[in-house]
Image (cartoon, rainbow, N blue to C red; front, side, top):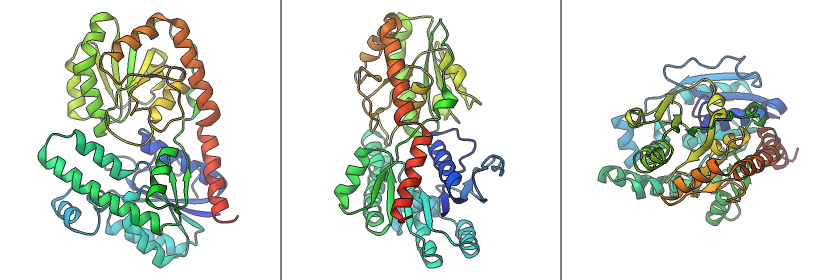
Length: 397
């Protein structure tokens, strides 16, 4: 099988949830098929070498376009495509795709994100290969949630209009594309409510359980960790809210504890939290595992956003209990009280973290159940095999 894998981001180094999904799904396909990987390279970053992506037969890197320029904003409001699609549409990528499609014949085109919808017409003109979208989120839902929480009138207007335009595009994509992969059964049900006969498969987010296999944890667990891309708006909002509204009471009760925000490319609002007592902002780190080894718990205090959280799966694989909002754990096959703890009220956080500190059986029980879950259901090797088998079945191979 020959697959063209098109992504709006470079997946290496895999230092965010979206990049991790890109990397491991591309790896799974590349190990079982002939994979050509075409992507936008990151500004100021070294483009991946063949040695970084050894499962790809061919790598094609295209410079990332400038985002949110005034002309793009106008087109995003008034033109055919929502602004996030306009942002990732460039003449350089169109030319690169045309050259790839002239040089090779493909059995399937994997579009990693519906942000790349503007390229589909060119793909169909040049090739007969069916197009499959990988939905990292349901973008209209993500934007509606953002709209509900944002205060700025201009941002709220932008979010409401973009959510409306996303919803229209999502229906069009569901009607026209050959197939779709989503991250959870919840999202599959939502898409089938829109177009009941759409071909939709669930390929959940996962974790490299072997990489995160935990050595014996530190006996002095005084670190609370929040891991994630600290440039992503939902993580920024969560970090600021938790530090300002929740952390002072926890620090007062446990003055030796340290809250560590571990994440790629922190925004100014996150960097400003370094001034708070017992709060550490690491910025980009080469390896997150040392922070997990010292952690009493991993927190996911998200109050907006969509998709499913790889940060929860990583913490479980690393042998660290998770305390999350219900929204943060959305889409995962977890049972509150067994696999993780749910904190939806401000006062829940101190109570649950205190329990983890004082009840060793609770801590060990969550660790054991979490590791069992990710090893049997959420390992990337399992999920990657499911994706390849799904594509093979869809193509009658």
